Image 1 (cartoon, rainbow, N blue to C red):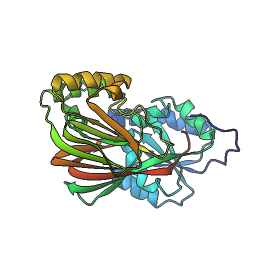
Image 2: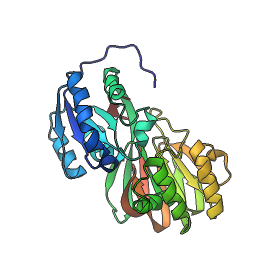
Image 3: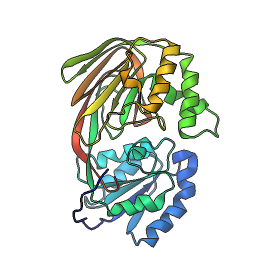
Length: 310
């Protein structure tokens, strides 16, 4: 992202939210090095370390509105704090130390590259889009969530559910790819109806639907290569009726972001999308599982998140 040559406001005090479990313990191991970098730059900060995302969110929400939050962890750590950031004006900085780091990867932030991540705090803050999800029918019907990266339903959520079965030494993309191959063996399609900005996009059997603000998930799968987090639109991508071999071939193209021209891929940009399944399917939100859903509505929140190191 390019940054205009405009005055940068003074950096606000930072509340550093550390998720020690992120990256299978990587965040806890790397925290002393990050803390030294913060101190070397004279960055005023306090540390929040809670047992759950909900507790960390409550701590941040109790802070004065001028205090910025720095999320140290993965996509799940960032996602847990969005209730205190999206639509509030509270600035957010991201230091990726998780498993996938997909939204941070979109911004060009790399795990362990602390100097670069902190130097970017000198950038002009950026207003980025977010997503608002309403679950209308399913395990969590009536709940509302805000997202930065996006959500997936069906196959990719089943992959997320099966990732715990992958060998412990696998990380990021390798872990996702291992789980994806395992999940293919139990591939199931369900009837889905997708309407974007009031216009039908796809109706029929599907194994996978993603609604994205960002470009990638799963540590590197470029599911929505046309996404732009500053264009005021979301992007929906859906697979049509396909067998295991076809889905495996399509996922290989997703790695390169060349799948949108495939006849079994249906996609569009919109401001709002409604997705209804005939039978409940798993859903993940910014990489974290949230039960099963049958009917959801997602709309874009233009410029609702203020990023300090985007």
